Image (tube, rainbow, N blue to C red; front, side, top):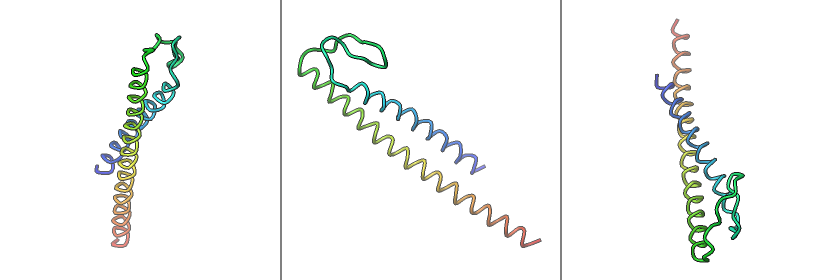
Amino acid sequence: MALNHLSQEQQTVYQQFQMIQELRRNEIQDSQPLTVQGYLTMGVVKDAPPTNYDDNIRLQRERTERIQQYTRDLNQLYARYAELGNQKRALLDQLTELAQQAQAGR
């Protein structure tokens, strides 16, 4: 039962990792230089961003902060996934040891 729980949690963490990785990838693609005519986002031309220099700098800073946050989130999820893997491995080792003891006791 504990092994099942660890596997399910690890799967959830993996799915979260994939979603955030895709968000980060899209944010990086969207952070290409802005133009006055418009810019592409996921293959679609959007309305022109603000032409004001300060607005463009603010938008770029916000994108950079989002990318950095996504990177931190990915690192935390990766560490959690690895931790769960270690817990599963330890549990499997215990189960193997118990099975060997049971075999020896027969």
